Every structure is written in structure tokens, then in C-alpha cells.
Image (cartoon, rainbow, N blue to C red; front, side):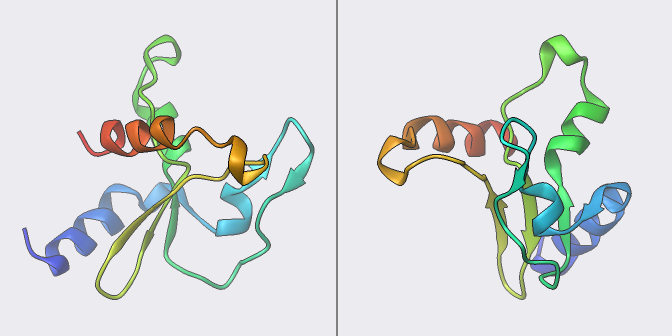
Length: 100
């Protein structure tokens, strides 16, 4: 699959989950956005996509958002904690699971 077919696939598969970085960064626990960017597009709310496709008791680990850049696909995980406290191994596992 080349970059154009990946982009087309993502646009069709995730169209109902179109969002912004700001909306996908919402931290309901702390009642705040972790990012204020509303201009970077296209962004897809991958958490919502996963919740829509799987039973709540069987939700796979997944990134919060997907951004399609000019030449790359970005998986985004928002963390509301000190960088030194982030479990990077857990984040890597989410990205692996999110692409299976």
C-alpha cells in the first residue's frame, strides 16, 4: 500500500471520527485540554474509533489520535503528567497494539 492509498483509506475509514488535536487532548479527569491546536488537520479521534468498533470490556490499547502528515502517519498519545513519570514502554505497547 503506498502513501496515497493509506491516506485515502484513513480518510474513508476514520471520516466519522474527524477531530482536532485540541478535542482529542481533552483530559476529563482534570477538566482541561492538553493541547490548543485546532489548525493541524486531518486529525482523527482514534480512541473514539476504537470504542465504536469494540466491546467496552475488550477495548484494545490504542493511541489517542492519528494525524496524517504530508509524508508520514503520526500516532499521538496525550499524557497529563511530568515527562519523567511517563511509562514509555506502555506508550510503545499502545502504538504496537493500535497498528495490529
